[in-house]
Every structure is written in C-alpha cells, then in structure tokens.
Image 1 (tube, one colour):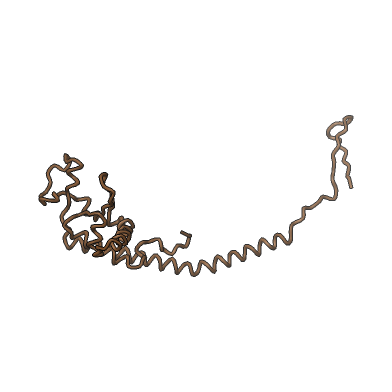
Image 2 (cartoon, one colour; image 1 turned 180 degrees about the vertical axis):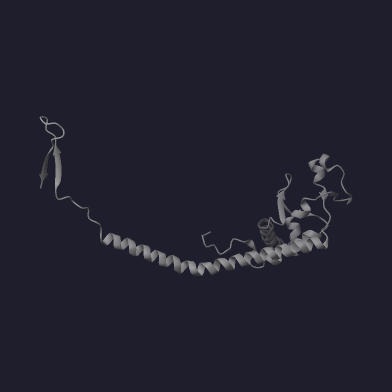
Length: 207
C-alpha cells in the first residue's frame, strides 16, 4: 500500500460485497440456529446443493465472513475440521438450549460441552435494521475514502514530478560547477629563537 492508497484494501469496495454482507446479516440474524458450519450457511445463502457449486459457495462465503469481523465470527471446534460461522452479536449472547429452547441456568458453572449445545434467540427486526444500516454506512465511508484518495492522487503525481525535476536541476548545476578550494599565496612561519625571549619573534614569509 503506497502513501497515496486508493482504499482498495477495503473489502466493502469489492463487487457485490455490500449485498453479500446484507444477505448474511439478514439470514444469520433470523435463523433458528445462531451458528452453523459455513457449508450449512451456504445452503441458506446460495441455495447450493451440487458438490461443485457448494465448494465454490463455501470459498465465497468464507471470504465474506473472514473479511468482515465487525459482524461475523468464525471458529473451529476441537473435535471438528469444519469451520463454523456466526453473527458476532448472537454468538456472544448464547443462553438457550438448542433443543428445548429453554433459558440455561448457571451459565458460569456449565462445562464446555454443555455450552456447545447453547444458542441464542433470533434478533428482533430493529436490531437487524441497525446492523444493515451499519453495513451501508461502512460501505459509504469506504467509497468516500477511495474517492478522496483518488482526488489527491491526481495532484500528487504532477507535484512529485515537478519536485523531482527541480532537485535534478539543482544537483546537475552543482556537479557542473564544483567549488575550488582557495590556496593561500603566502605562508607565514613564526620561528622562536632559543637565544631570545618569547617576545622577540622572527617572521619569515615563504613565497
């Protein structure tokens, strides 16, 4: 990334990314389960059932989930090789049993295995709307930063070129006319006679 970056590092600037984020927010907010393996979410998001289609969909949605940690969390359970994904807001508030849908008691005393059976309630419409609005605002901010960077880059290129030309001219002029050191015409040597006091000094001028 250069000094005048155009903001292409933002995942929101990828084609179709905002629509993908909104789709994922909507599905993961309202689904009965708060978390699933990414392949399971692909069947909800892309309706992919064919093996090749599912492989492509998993790669696509894995990028979406990984590149937007502001909304999603991905992880792998110790006993599984599959990566799971969840909406961060729901993942951090798991408090009901996945099967009975009853609120769990004494969460602090539950084992890791018991906690793995917990899920969370679907989000209310107001929360989903807030998440979608946040995604739209982040997308707009990324577009704005990208436009600003491109605007300044239009001026930076010619300015840097002009500055470089001036520096080259100055250096070239300095090399073409090197300064010559001044050589003294007369060297004065002061000789102190051993027979005379220091106040009597003889000076000789050498050509």
